[in-house]
Image (cartoon, rainbow, N blue to C red; front, side, top):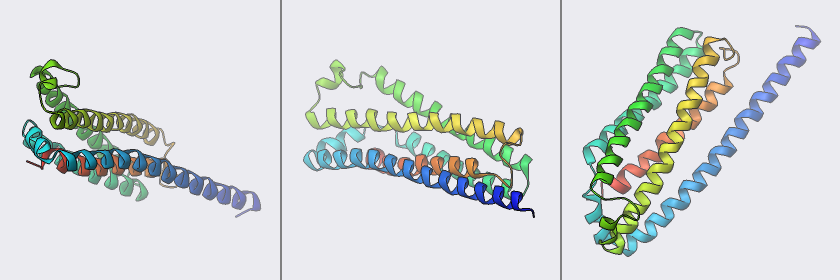
Length: 207
């Protein structure tokens, strides 16, 4: 290997290390964001335990469980996609990433129907129906819409990122020798799934 090639390899390694560090710092800020919301939830749940339990009965546990299974499976497919690319199997990596994207879309469709059902019953922030309920239930649904809505936004961002990764892999801009973008995308997606793992029991399993 020539000195020029060796310098290029070292530069690539430095760039990859910087990209990984940047992603971990970004994920840390996301953890702080949702961590603050979880803290607010904990405070209000401590103040209104009975009202939180009562409000949780309005949620569809079956749909929440199904979405949990879907996101956990999507984490598996994105991890397998990274492994497939590292092993030089571009086609399998693309199939697994496409499956991840399909799982994400399914999650959002289920969440859409869940939200629209609640809205149709007059349960949404500021609605006359919700304002007739005790403060604890109003706070519960306020947190529910804010936290699951923000999580849904992160899912949408993840879908865009995964879509770009599919294009990049197809065009050989992400390869077995240069896969840090895909790896960082996988880390982001795992965080999205992890956040839901906390949201699911907090809202759906306190009945």
